[in-house]
Structure formats: structure tokens, C-alpha cells
Image (cartoon, rainbow, N blue to C red; front, side, top):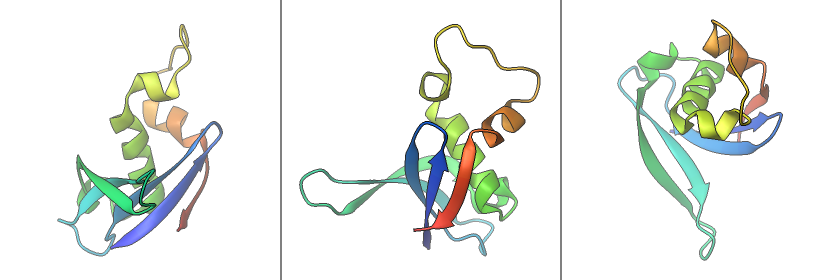
Length: 95
């Protein structure tokens, strides 16, 4: 498993995935405030859902976090949600 750091225009987050294994889970990762250790949360996605691509996995993660995470109140998305989210992604790198 590899940890990826996603930098968005408004936030940064981590996720874990093994992009070489189609059935490997994609998990949200965050640092525990007390111990500093990474804590993982399951998502409904696997590597195959992301096409074995870290940026596509990042798009899935943002979608999974929900519109309250990436939309301002009253803001609307056009017809292509994935492209809208891709425009928010500054970088996806191994952490």
C-alpha cells in the first residue's frame, strides 16, 4: 500500500491505495491528533474503480467526501462532476 497526498485548491488530504492490485481498497487516511499515527477509514472504492490511477482515485475520494466538502453554499456544478473536481486538484503525490 502507498500513501498519497492530495493537494486541492482549498485543502490537503491523504489516502492509501495499492494501485497495482485491482481489488485493493482505497482508504481515507488522517493523522490521529494525540498519537500522530495514521488512522484509516474505509471507502466504497477499490483500485479498479480508479482505473489504477492516483488522480482518478483522488477524484473518487473528493466525491466520497460529499458536496459539503467541496461546494460553497449556493454553488452549482455543471454536467461533468469529475472534471469539476479535477480542476480543484493541484497535485497528487506519494506522501
